[in-house]
Structures are given as C-alpha cells and as structure tokens.
Length: 108
Image (cartoon, rainbow, N blue to C red; front, side, top):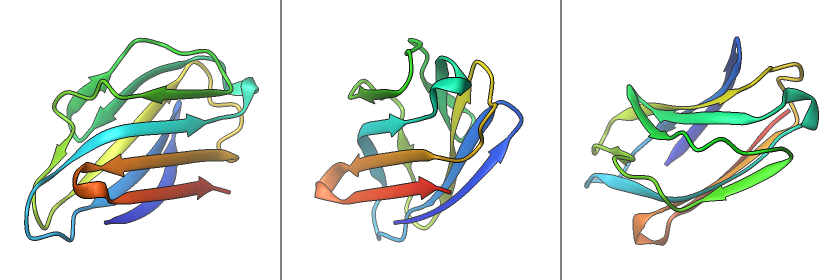
C-alpha cells in the first residue's frame, strides 16, 4: 500500500495505491487535524462517499466504512472534506486495511 498526500480547496487528499494481488478494504481510519479547519464533514474514496456523519476537531476514529474497497493494482484518492481548510498541513491519518496492513501519513 502506498500514500501520496495533497490538498484541494476544502479537502485533504491521500492517494492510496493497492499493490496487493487481491482487493483490500479499509477497516478503520483515525484522523487528526488543526482546530482552525473546523468540522470534518465527510470522507470519500474514489467517487464514493464512505462517511458523512460530521466530527468536531481535533480528531476522529471511524469503523463504519461501507464501500471502502480498493481493487488490486489500482489507486483511489481518499478525500477528507472540512468545513474550512484554513491550515492545509499538520494532519495525521492512520488507516488499517483488512489482512492487518496498517499505514500512517503525516501531511506536513
């Protein structure tokens, strides 16, 4: 699994590549973000919204990720939409995938 962080308007984006020979699902996401960015509004994986419950800063954990799958050999952008992306850096994202794979990204 590989990560490439970026930001776009009101969102922080991680491009995730699945290097495994089988599809994988995201089981769990932990995100920390600066309070100045306001509420985390929703999460998208590719073109599918996988979470939209809203969360107050500075951190949130979710296990409710239906449809959070990445086909083998492909990549999907994981997008975190915020109320107001004042500070595009200082975000930390931890993701646990099925089969016990764990990745962490810091957006400097």
